[in-house]
Amino acid sequence: MIYKERTMPKKLIGQAALMRRLHPDHAKYQPLRESYRNSKAGFGGEQDFDKHMKEFKPHYPYAILHDICLKQEGIYFQMDSILITPAFIYIFEVKNFGGKILIKSKPTQFIRELPTGERKVMNSPIVELERKQFLLTNWLAERKIQLPVKTLVAFAFTNELMMEEELETKILFTNEVPNHLRTIPVENELINKDEIQRLAISLRNHHQEYDPFPMIETLSLSRDDMLPGVICPSCGFREMKWTQKKWQCPHCNYASTACHLDTLADWNCLVSKRITNSEFRNFACVESSHIAKRLLQGSGLSKKGERRGAHYVLEE
Image (cartoon, rainbow, N blue to C red; front, side, top):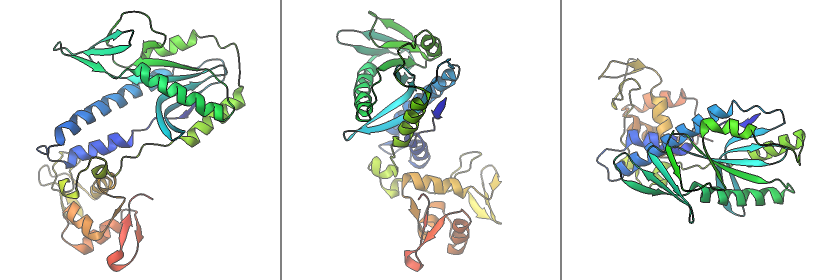
């Protein structure tokens, strides 16, 4: 049973918003673009892993949780996915890289060879897993749970893998994982169905999602770096106009009454969880304070304070 589904990470949501609001000539635009592309590919690989794991339905009780971040002894550690069985726990590290992957041992190295022939040394997912295995084992021990913790690296892209020799940590493609798990005997049962359920719920309750909002603080940007305007969802034009009680795109003539909601969402993840009438007018390019007031009040936001101290809360 799946106790926690995967959702789009806030980091990716924030990067997507920033791609819309940062000028392409800005010094941080190209590094952001590369980071966004990697984050998007990583999330796509994890979604591919989730799709294949839906095929795994063993006869024994189990629990699956996707994207779990825990804190142990002041250290945060994030696990792409975990599987709880009566006999062990599996931590999965999902990678999504194109090109050829050469895996060397002693010491373990992951080298990515691009179609151009260029080689890049990657951070070893095995080292990442060993750290998470250690921290999760300690997290469980504090709760008097003694379960072996196994690890597995899953590649979402059908890379050409070249391994010098077999490693202790299993490395598979995502579509191979369910079949591999079916071959592992579950004999020495250490916890029962009810205990698996309690552990899964405890893990879910202790999950602490990484929150990079507001992105301008995370990436040391300023409000002035953010391009204002309501963005057309049809053509991407960034200067929609509020006219005749609707947003109108002068570029493609798309019209809607709700386009400012995406603008408020951008403000929330980029700038602040609160917004004033004046800030909204400047960011959405609305001249009238009365129109801005009606739009903000009609957006389902909580209003706090009065007069000059009045503001609207985007996220409690």
